[in-house]
Amino acid sequence: MNRGIACLVLGLIVRIAHVALAAEGALRPTAGALAASAIAAEPEGVGAADFFVSVRGKDTWSGTLADPGENDGPFATVARARDAVRALLKAQKQPQRIRVVLRAGTYYLDSSLEFGPEDSGTEQGPVVYACAAGEKVVLSGGRRLENGRWGEVNGRKAWVVNVPEVKAGTWRFRQLFVNGQRRPRTRLPKQGEYRIESLPGYTGDFLRSPTKQFVHAPAARIDQRVVGL
Image (cartoon, rainbow, N blue to C red; front, top):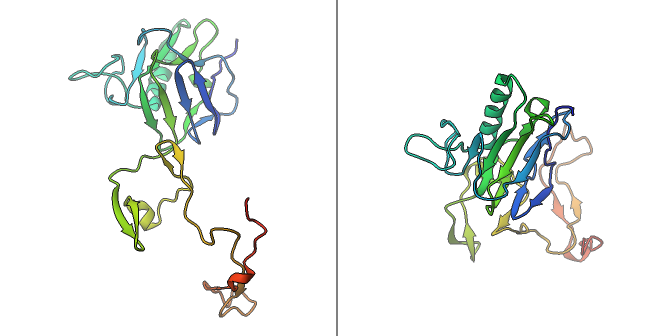
């Protein structure tokens, strides 16, 4: 069998036994990748493995221990385990099975996790990424917002989280989840859409007379055609 890799595609949630592997814009297969290796669930116990990954791990460790110790333990990221697998594949003289076990937790990815042909095994020596039995693993392309507090916004009680990158305009996000549930962003009008009545200062030549202002049409002229969409 040709070398290949089984990858999660964008927006797909794969559930295996009691394990959920979720990726939203997180895993990206490289062109030419096939399906010879696998992402699976460990049958029982943590199981034997060449490398381990844990949310309590460190990428500077060897990755050969299932639990953190004083000076060694599992890797912290799947990307670090992937790189270790690549090195092990190059060092092999004969195809041998390589197994990576992920411990329970949510792994937040700040960039795409890419697998290509160089990450693949063979029929005789597959590369397997597995979750420890009974442990739920989530690969998330999101980012955890912390240090929230109750406060007041425009005279109304609200849960407030300070995100400096958003305030500086260097990071924009489109979706917000609270306790696993999507939260819609506030909007005006609550139904329909505003119609623009005029553009102050605009003469018809946008290059010579650009404008950053517009005047809303009266409320009675709000377009209701998109209500319910």
